[in-house]
Length: 450
Image (cartoon, helix red, strand yellow):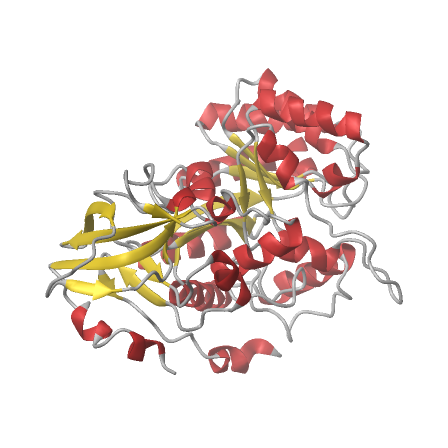
């Protein structure tokens, strides 16, 4: 059955709604900007049954669900309503090179080599713009409100890629909020190029970033002067008032995270540093884990887990089934009060052969991979308010006087949200029906195998 048959004339009614009441909407409290309105019926998953009043594209009121409606009412009958979601760690410049880049073998070293080969051969402005546009159109069709993308910023490439990003940010302004972080191996900050890159990032209002390994090396080796390199990075960031977002310890054995935490404290950067991946943290002994988490908390680091990509890359060996999931210990980090978000990371490139820029799908997989269920508690926050807070943007929640950027799901419980892909979701942007057709892969075929 088509989703619109469940909402009589929904598209027409939401085409230009000056006033509409979404009646009996079921919203996880973790996705409400404020506490659940007093008297709202709560279900066992921690979701409130509310009416959402939309006026002129903004949410005018959220009240306990009423028994009756009126001409301005769309009866949702307890279906889930979520905000549009946030992807705080992506790679729009790498995306959609599958079939063109060399085969990576599904390993981290293989992915680095394959990406380098593809970058050197193909990453001009036209190529980047076309693939970024495809990725953003896909994210838009899935209901993504904001993306922070890491941009490969090697010498000779950075100016091209950051210019393409700036064009995309302007083109998608008002629909998808875009941020970017520069991405280079940490030893790129050892010489004068580090300062030139910091200037490029500053011109574009980005974040200074990097990956805690040496050029051509692996996580956990090759950076005997890591503290000096981090001091250099933080000094460059501080001079330009840039926040920092790093790829950290994307391996089973690596120990850069405590160095990053201590550097943040040394430079007074508490609350301004985000660390993605942090895979090796999960394999520490219990006491070392507790000590490291305490240090992370003291440094005010935010952590982003990338469950789909880390499961794809970590512990992969030919002819051997992986023995661990590759993800960071999210539940322990959250218990310590550390901000944690889930994000999509790579999409159809050598680092991850799959994906579709769909944060609802990423969240559904994260709950299963990370065991964020029984009970679900505030698990929905990992794709909404948590990444929005990390990005410093006003999005990812449903609240009074906020834009009515919403998705309506054919689900009455969180287990139903997780069980299906929801290709029938209904999207509203500023209260207006905003479903879009996913871009066809045919848009990429003429250069996909070039």
